[in-house]
Image (cartoon, rainbow, N blue to C red; front, top):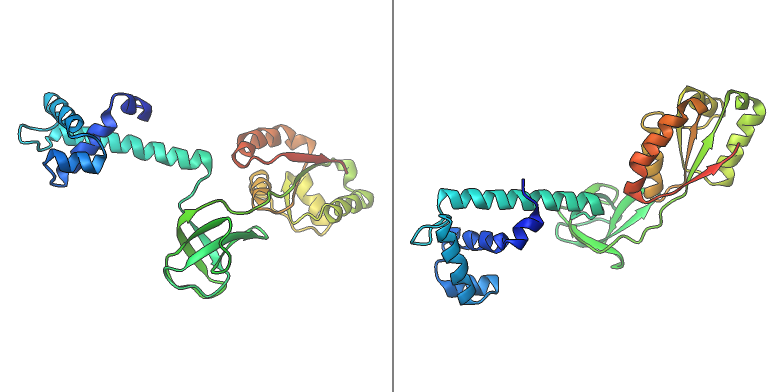
Length: 256
């Protein structure tokens, strides 16, 4: 698949737009030039090139070759847009919890509370969108046509290494103190030793994808703590480097 910038440099994007106009039934140069905001002379030049490349016939009807060209352009643009959304984190729609009773078409404000996204009819700062359907307070709702950026502060992400020597009353007490002092809201345990230590300390923890979970929790505004053992260190740093750039969150290492 060709690069979208290559298409742009060759003027192929404008050619594709003209083919779309022709497929919509428009044949007059003035109509096409007005819609595309180019001069009639410019539209004429593009049409002649399309005919030369056998993308349209003498009657300015797109040929199968022209339609295939358009499909390639649209596929490239679609992939570019998809990658751009993924790379930048920009979204056009999302799911949220209704903070109020909402009706379809209500303009809502989006805000993050305790790691959950809420949609409210009150407030217009930050990010806004449109409720896609009716929803009672506390129910999930889809929000589309999102504009702006959510007023949101990334949470702290703490990392703690533990060893077998820490599996003692003193070690468990220190672990709980760290959680209390740092006001940790989400704990991930990476490895059997880390899980057992959290379990003995009576700490609710996640053992499935704990690295990714802690990073995402921090990205959603929660203070998270990842507990891991030396045996899991090399795997931990691999996962950390593979995921942390997505959320632009920096880990803070603490000692037990």
